[in-house]
Image (cartoon, rainbow over all chains, first blue to last red):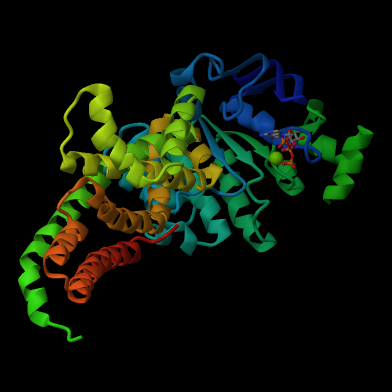
Length: 242
Length: 218
Ligand SMILES: Nc1ncnc2c1ncn2[C@@H]1O[C@H](COP(=O)(O)OP(=O)(O)OP(=O)(O)O)[C@@H](O)[C@H]1O
Ligand SMILES: [Mg+2]
């Protein structure tokens, strides 16, 4: 059953066409890894799903709701589609614990005590049980990104969107974030991940999509595509990433 | 000439009552100015084209004219135009509200817009409506950044009340002027007046310092 459905979606920024009539169905439980050259529209595609970008043509249905259905429907989509950003974007005035408790309190209307209880469990899950009372500025990049993942999970989304979650991290901090993402995938979370981590695509991904110039040009099984990339541009791209 | 301390002693009760009025005008004016300033600043930052234009016109009108002209307009011209009676105190407070409001609007706009766009997106991505993003996420970060420029504006507004001498409000400068006109002791009186202003602005600075220290600037 589809949880995300792009129907002929076009997205433009002024004169620049960023997504060109994209069709794409993503089912529950899929772990889709999105790769492609810089500027090919990966971030934009992801951001259209939770309506951080407005689409200009076609339709995009998430959890059976169109992104064009209106404000309160869009808020519902956003609650079902958690997002993790390249730059973490933690709320700097709140501790890690309050960052994670924030969504349930302000979006789902959960009481503070209950939200904090839940936040503690989520921080423990991402390996940060001891860091709850630290502010983001007191945490390493890898720790901040794991808090950000916990913050998104706290709203109990059905789907998680990751936009280059490890690109801002030093290589030695990447694996701690990737491990958390892998655990999430193993629990059956539906995930769409923009990343250059080819090993993650191979081991965790159930589907690999290669984007070029606003279009999906390759879509298939990660292991097969990575072992034998028939598309010449995908082959060339992979040589650059490795 | 000799500095005569007894002159200051005699003048003190009148100067104190002037200082009290100065403080009153400043506080009332700044409370109103903060309300107007937040409203106009948020209209500038997040309003639609119409609200933005209204706030822009207000800010430009006030920033482009001297506060003495503004208070004269409120006190002398407004009654003629609108057929309402305005007492000097009301005119003084209104002038600070309107004047400080315009500068505070720019401070508010600047500090809200200086907050990294990613925080807004993170809030929206959780499913919050925009007003909650402003209240719970951007506002608290912006507020911390506002404290130094707001403090500056508070001090400017406090000192601006001295200009209301032109409409005869009995604030500190006016009191000094009146005593001076009677006893011609310029040195003693203006020294005392200056020191009273310094005490008021100094206290304000101290309060702001403490507030700033207690809040982590983000
Ligand atoms: N807010 C915006 N305004 C104007 N143009 C934009 C905006 N956001 C993205 N673009 C343009 O859209 C195109 C696609 O951008 P997008 O960020 O989706 O690419 P990407 O595949 O994520 O690239 P990268 O790998 O560098 O992150 C680029 O040409 C970019 O310049
Ligand atoms: Mg991108």
